[in-house]
View 1: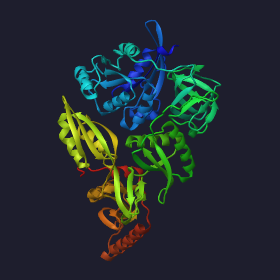
View 2 (view 1 turned 90 degrees about the horizontal axis):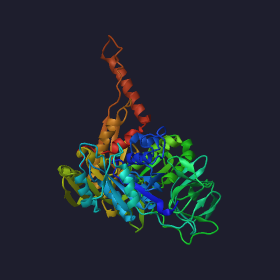
View 3 (view 1 turned 30 degrees about the vertical axis):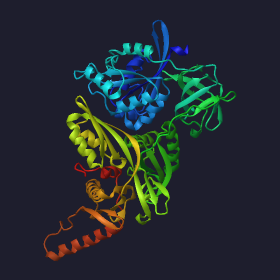
View 4 (view 1 turned 180 degrees about the vertical axis):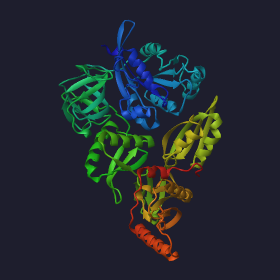
Length: 600
């Protein structure tokens, strides 16, 4: 097939605006899968995606469509909508020439709609705006079209109105994308130049790489070279997704497909690397992708220390599938050997942990999430702190800096006061706010540490679920920060230690102690829960003990019989408190670190 009859496009949108449902309709309309094999959200292959109702991994499918007596190949990539998976979107857009921007006609433009649209514009994409859910009574396509033009700055006069649920307007969309989206550029006769978009590990085939052929062609038996590390392989399989894996003889310039080449080491197949012909290499590598910047860090430790090596292997395999998280080995006196992992957000952290537990059958304990801080010691040397345990002696500190973000909040204008109140309580600095009809766009600078635990939950709660939130890292700022330690039964619990701003240390200490009192199981002895800065206790709560009525069986006699039994019980509880060990459940860690309803 001629390269002029190829179309590569991504579907981008805010979360829950109907990307995966539209992908379903396109696959059905083009006959990509039989009715017997079809299921809703067919491209969401992970159990975790189907349970949570979100797309975590970008998925691709090749569709065949006939239009004006010509056959076309359409390579569709369905992308995630949540801000934590924006790296997946960025990689997907690099493999395409155009984007379908889906906007819910009942909700309008939201924060991630803006972020994804700007990413598509940065990749020089032709963008087709699509108004979805027009079958719903609350649909307002005229108002949403105006929002697209005013807030994003692209024309929406030719925006297609569809219902991804019923299939209305899908055929018109297919005609428009064939006529409007540009065909890929490239030459099958030039030296081989292939971009690795994604990769994952299969225990039977080794590493499977999702690739976009820029120039040249790929076939079985061909000798290829990875340009980053100069390792060479022979291709065993070449194929496409229909959405099932289907072997083909050849992939030519402009196409998207997969290859296997007996690659066993995950480090040999880096996402963003360029593949070329071993005998006739291309003159230069493709630019690849900008490395992701983790913003949330936490320690992951296996409950069973004998599983450490399995845990290490599983992290290596999962990092091949999701290169947007980082990890490095660390050890803790309380938790043993584990890894300090960096993530793009709190949801990303939860998903990675759950995938490790499900896919590799390893039970994990996670420490409290934190961000990376920069410190300058009195000797002038700068260090980065990923973990409160690394916090140095305050006398050795010259200054300390924390990361800040620029956030965009899109919400109905009647919630503006509550949004201001929430952002100001988190040390926020307002940049601007603009009204677009009944919607307001608020921009704030905020410390990253103030939003990673429960900011998004509080924002959704205050705006009855209508607000959407997106952010970009904005560099570091000097701040007065201290380490807050939590003691349970007079022992420091390192996983609960946090770095906080000095102004809020006492308040946060009281909140954490109060929450721990609610979530910790009661013991046979009184349990002191304390917050401390250095050697100074700043807050305390006491969890009452279980009380057994040891005098219940007595009858008759004088008071001394009761006193004797109570004294014996008191002595036993004192000894138990001295030697008893308190096991803190995993659920207590995150629950304890959430801020209260009236926080700050």
